[in-house]
Image (cartoon, rainbow, N blue to C red; front, top):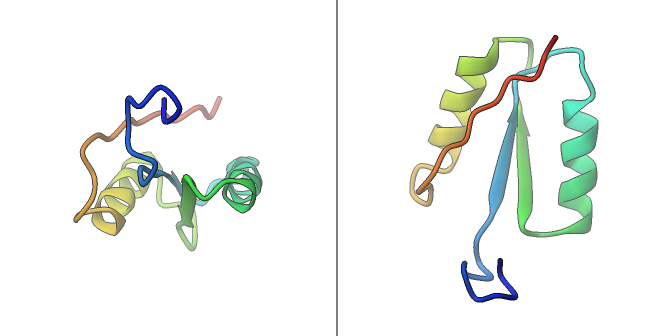
Length: 74
């Protein structure tokens, strides 16, 4: 999308891990370490899906235009 000039090169995708026992954190850390367009935050313990969404919105409050929410547990 950046190469197609559909979004700014300054755009970022923020992943908010809910602290569950799946591999989300490891995946997002790997993405963020390879590409500065990705960032991640992690809850200190499992506070469930909606708390992670709120934490992500608070973290990006000055910059967020869109929130996409998906809880893929189970």
